[in-house]
Length: 240
Image (cartoon, rainbow, N blue to C red; front, side, top):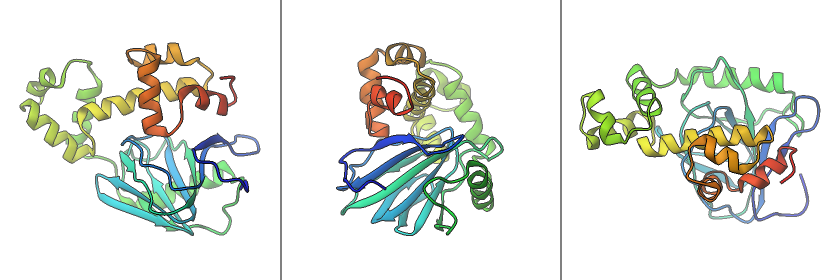
């Protein structure tokens, strides 16, 4: 871990073949971020202080010496802290994991070092989140499919679910953990993030993901991930 204490999220990849995407916070307390979810499992390793999140299952916290495992597709909102923290997020593809399962807090295993073996880590994470239960129920899955299957306004989609606009928003938020609009936005951000990691410049990423322009993408991206799209692209090995 670097000795200097940056006042921002530092993204990059772990060393070695098949390095994992990671984001490190070290230093002053980070501000909270907007609610979002990831296509990958998020492995939050807390080395100092405490990390706190809001999830659809309620608030959850991981302290120094613990790891918070957030399953793929599970909405969460990182909260600001009251004191300094050292935290490391690893993002891990788990093709067979149930989506949007329950977050789990576990003790940091002794074998986890700064360059974890992706396969070993994936097997361990899958084992740990498995007992937490499957992903969203059939009703939640139907609602997310409805919201992502069309760019029509929520008011226009509500009758298809037999609900009013307000009823759809309430039901969606209760079952999924985000409002329909926030869920759509997080889905768009994930699409842009994947393209940026492949080296696509921010302007076409914004257009392809459905944002009004690059500025709109930049504001939303930084609010959710604590970093600008250009800086993220550079951190993933592409020039800014």
